[in-house]
Image 1 (cartoon, one colour):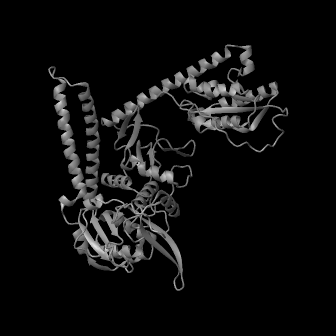
Image 2: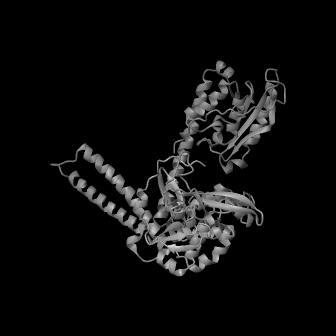
Image 3: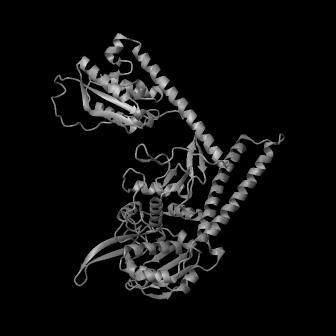
Length: 596
């Protein structure tokens, strides 16, 4: 891979408070030392000690003072990819120079110019020339050369020498990188062909010499065992991952998961003492190492090594996790009282089809004290100059929640929702439609391919473009079919909820127990594809009339309920339920919003 990292733009940092004499007053110039070590083997060498000794000698001979407080070291950062500039000590030195904390006339000592950069010469020279033009004297301790404006005036070939060093350094790194990529690619191809018994990449293992775990490229819940030449799961790490996945599948967000993992005593087993954070949670959930795969991307091609790690999740569990990740439409629960209806992207205003939102408030009551109240509103009605055709601003969320929980607490109602009716299953209908589209595209491509070999009736330029576009469309539709088939497998293995589960949660949910509400929210997402709320279904009726709730299950069954807006009692079932097609055609009204 050629290092084509763009030059780092100069950033202006706030100046540090002046602790010495102003820059305009003459002072003894400082000499800074910079060392970059890109591999662990270089840490045991004597290069840094030699560099410090030479820098101290050079500073004394040239009237400089060696700055021992600011030691610039980049350990394990690549000069070939520019990591030392983007997030290392050299980048901070450049920032300090731009901010005026490093003054013209001061020096920077390093072992060789290739320590400054191994990027392509055009990018390496950008940082080098920036320092030299700014008056910084760069000293290479390996050969005693100085690179500065004064040195350029004495020796015109000094700039050419720097260019040659940068070219040689980049070529060496490119050759090493090319060889490493080739070896890694060979290992990956051999693994995919069935070869085993070797490692691909650096393993995560315990180093007796260092007395700690070296991280390598393996996930933190694994460990390499040299005695058996195999990778095993760390018991505590595997338990932590399983708990993390369980919390996520309950609907918790990364912030809540990180807090809960810390509270429950689970640790990140990477040997660095890091605490749980949202990035670590998301990175773990995205890792295909959960199903035992190690993934590399080499020269734009992905290599998935199946069975490289012991799996934590089964294939159907992984599919369910990815489907849950894909379908999340709103932030996960980070509130003290997790919402149920509005948190899964299934609740909509029946009048206009816009998603429902929740508004929370606390009110003081003489008898019960401070009371939490949540109301459901049409999301369109709160927009500026927006208005929903419904004449009612909002309804209390608790009565609607009580009605849904009560309805699902009877097994006969759940049986009606999950009746076996493939023709009413929207997921099955979508899958069949995509399969039909794929067959149609394949037939179209076949017709064009027949004419590719026909000299009497060759394809025109336009038809060749249509063929390429059709092949691209087929690839897209094929991927969609595979995804829908994966979702169908998840639905097949998914356990249907029971009335007993709903009834056991009802009281705790209405008492605002967070864990119970998270479980109920998961049940609701697994049971219903859509819930439409008609807050004022009959304009001629009183505004205290029952709320109409239309339930559409994941199997396509639809049931309408009339719910008392104050108590949550189900006062009846609706004989006529608006069709999804009619709801889809509904438009927002253009009338002016009500005056509040």
